[in-house]
Image 1: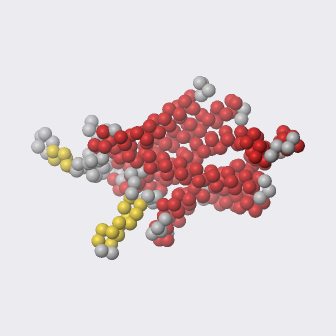
Image 2: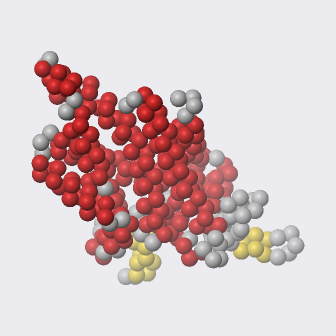
Amino acid sequence: MLKNKALWTGGFFLLLLFLLATFGSYFSYVKEGMEGKRLIFLESGGIERAPFPPSADFPLGSDYEGRNMVSLLVMGAKDTLILIFLITSIRYIAGIVLGAIASFGGRMISSVLNVWDQIFSSMPVIFFAILAFNLPLLIYAENRFWIVIFSIALVEVGRVGVTIRDQLIHVKSKPYIEAARTTGLTNFGLATNHFLPILLPTMLVNFCFDIGRVALIIGQLGIFSIFITMEFVEVQAGLYQISNTSFNWPTILGDARKDIYTAVWIPAAAAFAIMYVILTFNILGEGLRRHFSRLGT
């Protein structure tokens, strides 16, 4: 395990990410950076307007409100990770349940999983999301947040369910499973003593890789200005506009899409943060895969 550089590197990156998301908002530097200042009066007598480019005062630059990009990213880290883990967890809970049912004789569920997997494996998730989430019915839906969360999660449930089903069928064919049944071991005992120990390593590895996939998907949604956290705010009588309710990184990336030529550091900072999450969990997933391979699981 000590020689597994990928596992140690991924674990270290994950620890930094966790500390940033949990405690970063309490630092005075981060709080002060959120106050924002649109104008800076220079000692030479000139005036500089936001957004400010990267400098000693703004290591990653500022947005158009004069807020430090470092502060924005730190404040949005927690919401971003919650979104990613929520989507991935829903996907795996549904996939594990359906895959388990299919492996124990649920032929209809098994057929549904096959069709589900085939349909969405041939169509990128981002295309489905763009088509579905731009429908007026979803844009103005009262529970839009949960609809979007479950939609993104359920799109690839078929892939997870098929993987779980095939692994369980493979394990059930082993002679020691039949031997355990003849000794009177209950289904619960089989699950905890045989099925779970075999499935857990693969599920952990795939879960890490899927976190990276989900981070990429919500980043792509941000580029196309499809935001998960938003609400309609009345600016005038009968006139509403979309207002983002979070500083999560896809939102920052989508809001700054128009700034790619004038203030490139704004979308670049958000894109780098999303890339960091993808890189972290892909390295961690590879490290876990190597670790379990050495253990023979």
